Image (tube, rainbow, N blue to C red; front, side, top):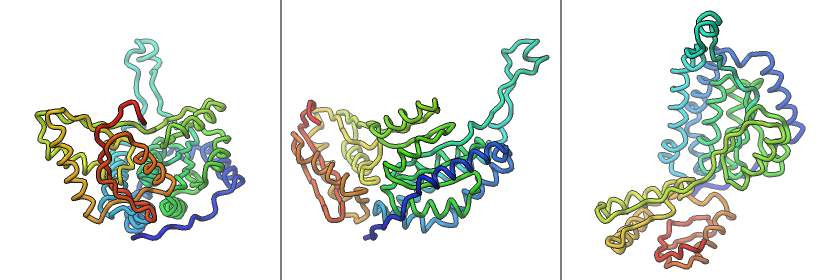
Length: 339
């Protein structure tokens, strides 16, 4: 069992303002527009992940009790693939595009074209459930686009946040890429600063505050929020395989994924058989010893309350409050009008 991590002091507002000013100054010099600089930083990014693979999986084990292989496949490998793709296509993506529809005068004679220009200083606010992937993936794109970046990891994944702070300052150009830390209060103050683009991953509730703050500066914003990924099991399905796959998907990151399978719609003809198969596979996977924990006590209590107040029949609700462990529970005969 991994130990909890004690958070460091958050970045002060003055430090945030100083970093923000530095990024603006750096972008104004045109330094980050250079394709050579972008490639250099992407390669540094690669080695940051490669050199510290064990430290990263250890941090994820501390934050989420996640098995090393699950962390490699869900957080690290995707980042490395993205870096290689951006390095392979960077020059192709950055080249000017002639406008074929501009006509003879504006097109052929005037040489009208679309020029790819970096937006400026980008703020990336990451999430806690896949702290490295969801925080650093947008950073890769921002670097490839020639932007300066301010990174704000989630404060809920403490070990991952602190490790990222160390690695970013060690491997990436501090004149163009800065990482700051903080909770809701610090993030609110950070959003008062003017950015040229904001990429936020998190809940719809927090996204409303991000959008409101961005609107004051007319800052374009990308919001990657939660969703639903229901499964449908028909009467012609391989019921055992369907139950096994759905149980596996729910165990991934202890179900803490925005598109995890929270609802299963089953044909009445195979309903009872499917429930028995699902109970079998959830019980079998629960005994593997490699399940993640719920990220913190607040979220554990929220999920426990949902089960307590469920108007359906709850099966196999195994909980360990002290360690924030909760196995996937199966709830049948659900009241569709309830929560």
